[in-house]
Length: 317
Image (cartoon, rainbow, N blue to C red; front, side):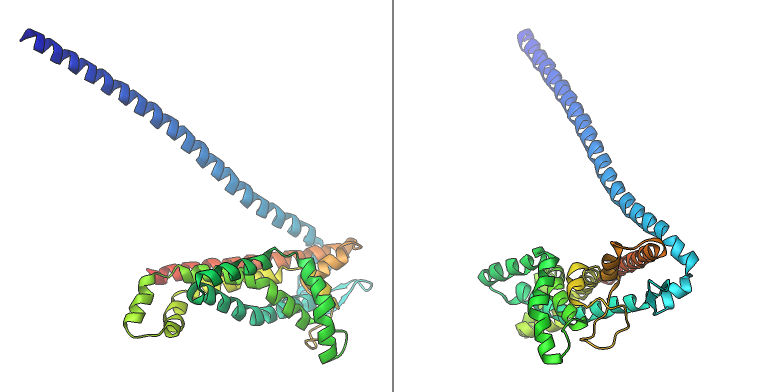
């Protein structure tokens, strides 16, 4: 009896020792995990802080460089005058703002429907084999350098436009065609993500009600994904309005108001690149002022996307 008691006591001691050892190991593991997670959290915070700091620093630098133009020319004249003459020290940027929006909106009218229909095809209609062929081709468009698009516009697009419409072919229409092709990957990819995020149960419920595939796409899937599609179009607009090289090569670069789809105009980005190499004094500060305006437009587009995302989230709730 005493031997059994002794053995049971030994077992209890061994068990308690193992339990204490395990608890110590868990504490060590927990402490090690906490240190690693804290280090990762600090690293992520630093990365986010650097990103925000970079944006703030760029914006502050551009605004600081642009301040002299607002005091020398005046904000009102700079933003409302349609006269741009370096020799006469007149720097009105209305033609460039108008040109940027004309080129961007025209590209959206052509490119957005093409991109959304491509996304619908990939998400709802295409077979796996067809999807495997089309999706890489669409994504490849995003990887083509903009100068190649511009070269294609000069060699192929502008001669065709000159043949049918007269003139030299340079102008908004050429820029619309080139930019429409360039924004297709952005809008199509994001729209496809929005469509595929819609639960399959919604489609099955529509089919159970007797709807066809196209009725389901048009009346159920597209309305459910409209916020994501609108976000994609706005981001495509940001892509178009910030494009420089391709637009510079086909738009004509004439600092004048819009007079026709085949009449040369200029945009904010193209004029900045065109003049920056030889600018000085007030002329250079005017270019920085144009850059500041372009920065604010881009911020407004990003803000619109954020507001739409919040609006879509509140609707979903």
